[in-house]
Length: 439
Image 1: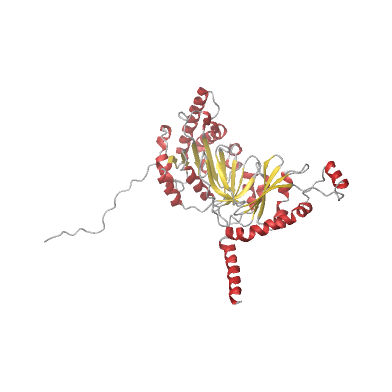
Image 2 (image 1 turned 135 degrees about the horizontal axis):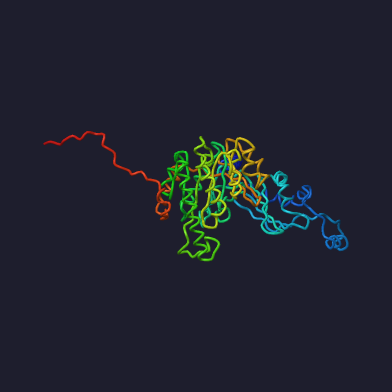
């Protein structure tokens, strides 16, 4: 009896420890079977009370009354597939006539409480079908990227979604992007993960860090260009605009409309421009800086409008990006398809980044707590959005990756004047005074 009691207590203690320290193990052993059973037993009643059922067709109602001799009941979405994962449960549903994905998305909070899971996310897979992503625990508490998340084909996994999948920065789908966030919100951590992934791809990285290079100078071995002052940034952007026009001439010569339609042997290398703090390019301290500001804004707008087709991409970061920055700010923001908003100090900043693409996400971005740095809301022009969090990555780790892949820096003569100077390591002087050896 004592052995049985001790074994039971040890098992309960082990499950309690696993629930806190190894939530994936606890979910696989306990949470998944319990949730699957609860979902199976209460599915029809839950859909009914949440208003996610419709009246059956006339044929079905006729068969139920006259053949089956039973009462006609409302029809919920039909379950096509149920699949368990290490973080939750995925259910594919076939929607009946009269329901749309937005109906299930509006009831996601009620479904979450009904089935006792951490979150429920609704994704439309194809017309008439949706997938419910039920997450059993808070996967953003301790971020662990999926093992299959690797940079490939201009796609960089940079964060983890709330449903346990990887959030990928796809430059083919969203060529221009804007990242907003207050100090200490994890904006720099997001950029580190982005540079870490981009360093492993055959692309040219261009850094614009007007804070004297304190953020991006450590990544110099992998950068094709780095400027640290607004004057140098204006010169660099002029060169990029000229390169964009040359690439358009190349596309016209071969009769194609996109860089990726060119043969591999003549295709120019894609260029990713990383702007650390966009406000430093817009703000001026005297009237004599007005001309430089006009050059900067005009070049950025031209690149944002047309450079996608020639493989030049903008990755712009800042704390705020509104009309108070001056003429051209809102016009540039409208060209930035991808949006990532970290914790902000006011609701207006969240609206600057999300109101025009995903209005429903503004409230979520405004409520990100300070003790969860790296948490953000990612959205795009399709209207969809998701809550993400970047894994903690040190600056030294990213710098090490940049040194490891320094050999992948492409040979681009137009960027050579802006190539960062790498520090030359010299042996230090000896601190001990040599003593002559005598017999």
